[in-house]
Length: 233
Length: 189
Image 1 (tube, chains in turn orange, red):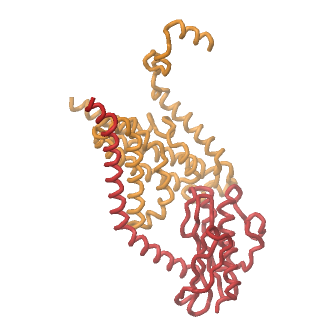
Image 2: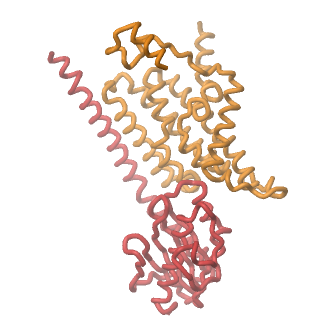
Image 3: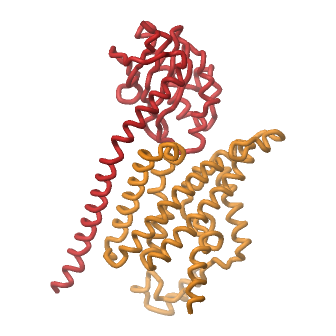
């Protein structure tokens, strides 16, 4: 029993890295993914900042999950996340100014990072504090990993450098398109395809087309309507 | 019925208000502790930046004369420090960039040439925009004494980064504003 429990904790931790990678499989946080991966350093900075806030917000939201009524859960999550981000920003700015000058640009972007809200809604409000913290760690690592991979490809091809160290720039000129949005989308798509190939569709949730999950269930009269709809398709 | 009203309407409002109050209190407490240190850090950073931009200066005195505003509230000089040994001045300029306000410092020597440009605060998204803030890019302004245009594209003296012209133009306009301040002060007196 204890072994099963331990295994499930491990799977919670490792899920976010490849199998349910928040950026490449769940396709959450696409805006900061594309905006900050023009270099490896920026991608790493964004990944670490988002991971720190994700872990903390997952813990707080999980601890409050029995207190927060369902009706106001989203405003409550937003208040907690925004409050956390602002506190972290103020403390970094005051006590670790060198780290703030490196990560400060990314911190306001975290409030609008839907991975934080997505994990609060999908995981933290249904699971224990420890499980939520592990999910935050796994998802944070997965997000950082995805951003570093994207940053590596874009920086190498766009600027010919890696972490600012000239590598390809000695041989070929940088392809500017990789520093811009179209190059970001291109690399993002290739990496998504690669991760899908690696996981061989295991991450896909099989869809159940039963009537209970249908938005039109309350007005649908039954089998005949569904057949008609299928024929029309 | 009474229990339903409580669960449906009162409890959500009470919980949301309570969470907002707790978070606001935490923010207020953090701000009270952090803000004096942030102000002290900002002053130390600004002093270090002034020394970096005008290394020949021995000490600085704030200029209390009229400050230039190219576009009031948007592009203007917020403070000027003149070197005590009259080797030049450093102007702090507020300008308007892609992500909002951008604060920069421009060092100008007593011959009217730019000695250096440094961005001290901005809200631009990391990536292309911040390429305009690198040491190599800003080094292009060194030695210039006149801007031909407020726009980096039309000036012709700076090799700007295509696709990031909003930040580039904001910085360029800031340098233009600082040089304007220098000429209106009649140089370093």
